[in-house]
Image (cartoon, rainbow, N blue to C red; front, side, top):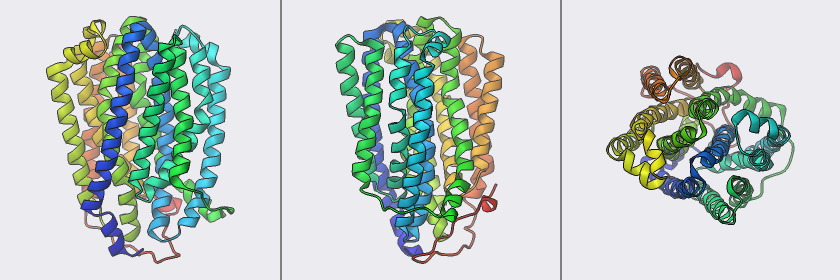
Amino acid sequence: MDRAAIERRTGGRAMLAGGTILAAATMAASVGNYGLNVLLGRWLGASEFSDANLMVTLMLLVTAIAMSLQLIAARFSGQHHASGTDEQADRLANWLERRAALAGIALGAVLVVGAPSWSDFFNTRSPWPFAILGIGMPFYLAQGVGRGVLQGRLRFGPLASTFVVEMIVRFAVSVALVAFGLGVEGATLGLSVSFVATWAAVRIAEGRRAGGRTTTDELRAVLAQTGPVALLLAGQIVINNEDVLIVKRNFEPALAGAYAGVALIGRAVFFLSWSVVTTIFPAATQRDEAGAGAGRLVAAGLGAVAAIGIVAVVAAAVAAEAALGQVFGQEYVVVARYLPWYAVATSMLAIANLLAAYEVGVGRSLGPRIMLGGAAAQTVLLLLLGGDLDGVVQAQAVAMVGLAAVSLALIGPRVFAPTETSTIPTPGHRRVPAPAELRS
């Protein structure tokens, strides 16, 4: 595929169409997931809801791993698609999916075998939810690879459908089992069943992959991409989840459950922004492979993320008590004043995450390293200020404002700098940066 064709495929209209499809699917999935959590918050009460939200938080840790696999797969899939060598990407995806499934089995074993210990550590009512969640791990990690292939090839419609399937299955199974009286165990089983359904939907949408063995050079190229993604993953895991885990560990169950409601709503900005990241990432990869610039795409993405954040912050400032009271119940209103600050923190994180994902897409590691630095800063501030909920929220807001400012200052000039001249790949040939070429 030549440079002109890639620029047409990744132009403003094409990306707007793809982004709209993904945004609609993400919104539908978010509405369904939030609706489920509203029901759980009301049916289970604050104490049991804190246990259910812990399972969701652990799932989000796994989601970060699945997203890292998706980014790796999207990058090499986009590179091969730009150079007309999709069969090589198929072989690499097969190899990566097998490793992802093995990692999922290992992670699931940690949850299943250690369930009693995890239950004691996090003060949960029962160890069974940990074991139930562990069963779905292999499927959830494996599906990340398939989603990455769809993303890298700009197949946004089929990719969007997998998010909708995941939400529908999770909502239906969880509601049915909780209504039947299975409580937190039923809600967790809904999560694991949705992992299996997502894996099946991804395989159907992706189609059958080519067989054959991968070469050493192909594997080396994939492994060269894991460093920046691993840094981005580590930063996201810490930033998105340590506050909930700290509160769950150190505060009484009712207060931890109320804070979980704030975190659940506050995280919406970050997860809604993923539709923007998912659209821009493969386009930036393909443009970089062809020697074209992605400054306009990134600028449009930053504008979209900023707009989402502004709406969220204003809405939280105006209607925090009403939102928590109407959505979860009056016992959650006691922490309503934290919601605007939480929205500010996640808005800043969303901006930094978009820039970091762009850096990964073009083979650079500065953005992920800045993300990891932001995670370290948040950890230090939480240790210093996290004695009460005011300090927990303030620590996150300060750390994330700093993270966004540093990201814009250091990555922004690189995004909008004139495009470096690079070799335009021809069919059957692809330019893959070796580890030493990963620019910092």
